Amino acid sequence: MKIAGITSARPDKALLARLAGYTSAGFLAAGCCLDGRAPLAAGLLAACRPGKSALAVLCGAAAGAFVFLPFGPALRCCGILVLVYAVLSAFRETRWYQHALFRPVTAAGSTLAVELAYTLQMGLDRAGLLRMAACTALSAFLCHYCALLLRETAIPKRKAVREPDGLPAAAAERGGAALAVRELRRPAAQEGGKPRGHL
Image 1 (cartoon, rainbow, N blue to C red):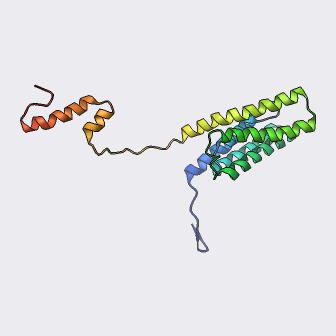
Image 2 (tube, rainbow, N blue to C red):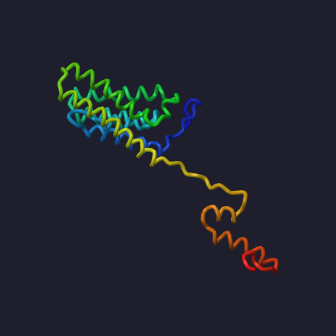
Image 3 (cartoon, rainbow, N blue to C red):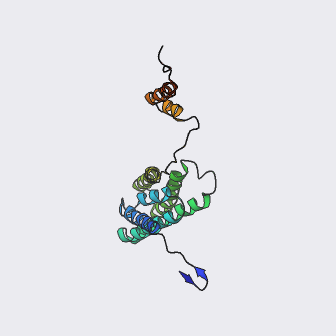
């Protein structure tokens, strides 16, 4: 479509379907709440790469938090989600982001920071500290497993590589010794001589 000299491409249907899936996953992750906390939403958001998919998870989880949680815990959950997204966006160009533990530590650290502020406000007691520790550990644990799941669904397809040595070398490397022997015997049979394997 062209309006006022500006060409606008139609949005890709596959991209829209994928973003809708991420949004609904974030919405339902916020529904998995434990005592007014949603560690799965923080873990899922931290497992996503910063960009459109993470923004879709953030929007879905924020909406789900206000649907499934009371207003106070929903604000706490949204604070954790925004903090996770901000940290991931700020560090995505650094080498720390490439480290395997960066995302789980981000989820756990953001959860701990926000939960500690709310725990201090409500008063330190044993039950509050246990809930805070459990939510922090769960967000890191769930982030790790969500990252594994997202990596498995986005494995790039490998292109076939042609080997310069030809079929006998490729077959021998891959365990197809019978094919390699057959290819070695074929030129000898065409020349009229005995195959190389015979005396």
